[in-house]
Structures are given as structure tokens and as C-alpha cells.
Image (cartoon, rainbow, N blue to C red; front, side, top):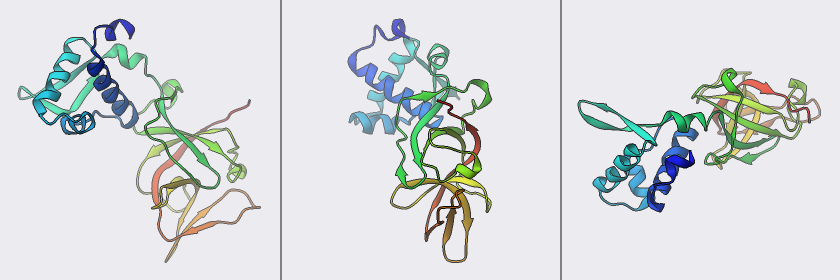
Length: 206
């Protein structure tokens, strides 16, 4: 990628990195408005100038419909994608509570096995899911979705932004987040959101 970015100005490089990180982290590019707000560019034309420059220099291209650029259809050039293979490492998820860090640039590559846009990876800390054969240091592969069936293993997030890996059991006036460790008690919360459902586990044998 070095030869593609050699001719970029400092500003163009910053815009490119912002676009690249958004695409890799969430699966689609930022809008013109998002770019403008991030870089305090008040005019959409100012943002478009940067996009045209990056497109001309081969770093990205924009899918067009009816001869007009679609804001969210910014795609990375194949060379950039080839160097950005893998799933976003969104942070660590504790057996207790922790916070997620969606903007991390570090990535974990499990090749074609889990290479889908709606998946993400979390590294497990703690031993609350040990009876489900998920140990401290393992990686869980999660499918992004906002709903889950009772009994599914999920990454759940509280309104305070804390996230935990547990079995999901909605009850009448609360939600039970059930660990897979007979020595631990369930966590009961009034509100929680499903961030993703676990679809795979990668064991860390180190």
C-alpha cells in the first residue's frame, strides 16, 4: 500500500484512513456528512474534492447510480482490501463486565472460515463460560444482530455501555444473563441489548 499513499497530502491521508477504518469496522463507508463533521469541512464540495483525489490515486472508488455518487457506496481498492483481510478485533469481552472498543484498527484473520461482513471477533477474559468450553484468552466469533432466542449465547450490552458474554434469557420483568460456570451466579438486569450472537469459538492454546 506504501506506493499508493506516497503521493497523498497529510489531509488526504487522514481522510483516507478515516474512510478505510469505517469500512473495515462496520462494513460500509462513511457518508459525505460524516467525513465533513469529522474533519470540520463545512462544504460537501470540499469533501468531494478529497474523494475524487483519493479515487484518482487508486485508493478507493465510488459506485455510481444515475451518474451520481452514492454517499455510502465508497469502496476500497482491491489492493487495500488485500492488506486488510480478516475480522475487526472489537476489544475484549469479560466474564464480568467491560466496554467495547469498536474503532480499534487491529484485526484478526481467520481467512475464509469466518470472512463475512456481518461478523466480528472478541477476545474472552475470565472463566464464566468455561463449561461451554470457552476459556480465558479464547476468541468468540459473533454475528451482528439485535435479537436473540432464549438460551442463545450472546454478547449483551447494558445501557451503561458494559458488555458481557452470557446465555440470554429474557424473563417477565428482567433479563437473566446466565454464565456457563456452576460456581457463578446469573446476572440480572432490567435492560440490555443484544450486540451479537456467538457463531464460533477459536481456542487459544498458548
